[in-house]
Length: 108
Image 1 (tube, rainbow, N blue to C red):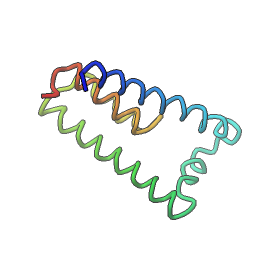
Image 2 (image 1 turned 60 degrees about the vertical axis):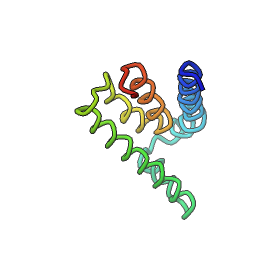
Image 3 (image 1 turned 90 degrees about the vertical axis):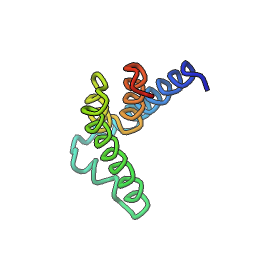
C-alpha cells in the first residue's frame, strides 16, 4: 500500500466513523440529554459491556502511546487524538494520530 493510499484510507475511516457517530448518537442525545444515561446504555448486557470495555481500553492504550511519544518522538498536535478518542470515538482519534504522526515524519 502506498503512503497516499494509507493517508486516504485513514481520512476516510476517521470521517466515516465521525459521521456515523453523529447520525446514530446525537439525535437520541438531543431527545434525552442525560449524558450519564447515554454512557450507561453501553453497558446494558454482557456483550455490550465487552465491546464498551474494549473501546475504553483502546482509548487508554492510545492515550498512553500519545503521552509516551510526546517525549520520545514529538508529534505536533498529538494531544488532539485522545480528545477525539473521547468524542466522537477511538476510531477517529487513532486515525487522526496516525495522520499526525505520518505528517510529522516520526513514522520511521
